[in-house]
Amino acid sequence: MDLTYPPEAEEFRREVRAWLEANLPSWWMASEEDLPAVDRRAFSAEWIKRLREGGWICATWPKEYGGRGLSTMEAVVMTEEFTRARAPKRADFVGDTLVGPTLLQWGSEEQKLEFLPKILRGEIAWCQGFSEPNAGSDLASIATTAVPADGEWIINGQKIWTTEAHEADYCFLLARTEPDAPRHRGLSYLLVPMRQPGVTVRPIRQMDGTSEFSEVFFDDARCPANAIVGQPGDGWRVAMTTLGFERGSSDTTGHSRFQRELDMLIEQLRKAGRTDDPLVRQELARAWSTVKIMEINGLRTLSDRLHGTKQAEHVGAVGKLLWTEYHQRLINFALTALGPEAQILTGRAAEERSLPGTGRHVGDARYPISSLQAAFFFSRAETIWGGTSQVQRNLIAERALGLPKESRADREPRR
Picture 1 (cartoon, helix red, strand yellow):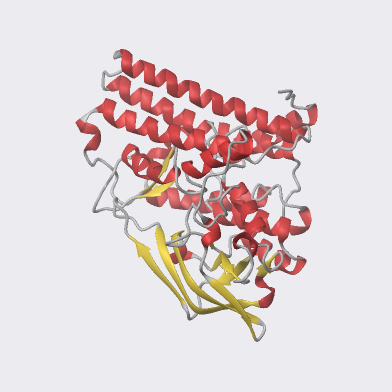
Picture 2 (spheres, rainbow, N blue to C red; picture 1 turned 45 degrees about the vertical axis):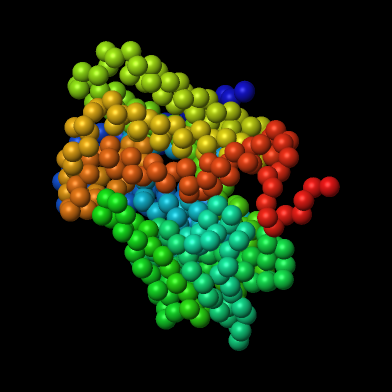
């Protein structure tokens, strides 16, 4: 690994740091967790305005679409400085990180001009329509169909575990447009309006009382013929691009949220008098080592990218497998080490708050879980979304180690 930040990157770092020092309130680092909900919402609205004026939203996008056209190195420096200051970013992961970059790579000029400015200005909300009741890890088994008719696509089918579907204006979804083609080649990637007849959203109530996910039904729903991203039947490749953005875009800072969470857990365990236990100390040492490995792997990934080294597909699978299984193990350990009191509901009702290893969370007043309990529930899903741990292991085995492919009922036997 050969990674040296050039002088111009360090100059840009000073620019970012100066802007943050001038715009981030002095009380933010110390008080963000305890800020009342009303004040937090007011700050968030003002902060997003400042981010937009400063050009920090979607800053890597080309200037002609509203971004700053930052280089890879500048984007890394910006992320590092925002992370160091714990400065919040706009909470639009789906638009900013998934569909926006996918349109930049695959979208037509018409699609870019129509959607990218709206994403940048926060005028349009998105959800992702990939998983189905019988097509989760095996994404190529999708049964939702899209049929061309009178200059439109007519969509029928069901999606499930669709995050924030109840708030979305559009859904980017995979549908089968060529039923006679091989499974991976008969799919298309469509941009479908959610607020129309024929689209039904049903929230899925979770164990903690919240309904972040929904199931979505499409009954003769419609989208224009030109709402297809890429070519008909090429949806698999487009979707893999989106999933690549989902699985990690902050090479050198991805570990930082886990480091912050680990530091907080160590403090909790210390206050509870658990850190003298040699088994607890051993598990904490294991956790610290794993977070450090995440940091080093992030630097290696960045180094490869800067030096033009093409990474094998299994590299992302290794990273995703590492951090998701680490997080589940850590939270399970923390709840066990803290004992029965860790299971008492001590959360702050329905207020929105930030969870270091998880992100923002809005609780339910009827089931006021603590931050640690919320992290436990959320970690259950981490080894599923973006490709299950079983899928990641198969990918590593087949693509990296050259092992025989797993037998499947729909695959011809080896001869």
